Length: 195
Image (cartoon, rainbow, N blue to C red; front, side):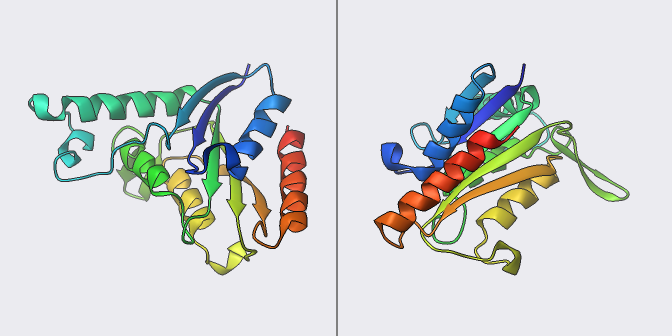
């Protein structure tokens, strides 16, 4: 049975297209074991000087960082337990939501999810794949390097070892109601059809 870690990142709640795409995938895979983390309703704190030591490689000394370290341990355990990361990726100002970036900041731990070797960094999250459920108002060529959301997300996933990444995109959502409905329908069908 497939274990899916769902990351919902949209700030638009019920109106979120990325959440609709996630729901389409889950509806097509009812036998999966699903763990959901809604980063809008329950965001991972941004890294600050007060939390940085808590997410470092070595376990921090003192109680000040215990809660930060416990959250990081929990997030990392969810990743290692999953066969599939199903990530909502709405495009905000040409990048990923800051809540998703914060999640990555906590999940990327040297010596745990990646390590440095003589040949460069090596991701330690093995045998896990990802699906990015992307939604965006405009239409863009992701191979051009702009916008940055897909490239940045794929780079961070690859850094921790997740290199099998499928992207399903609903785009042109600001091009009028008919164009938006068609884009959502096409992307929803593509999500549901994924094996």
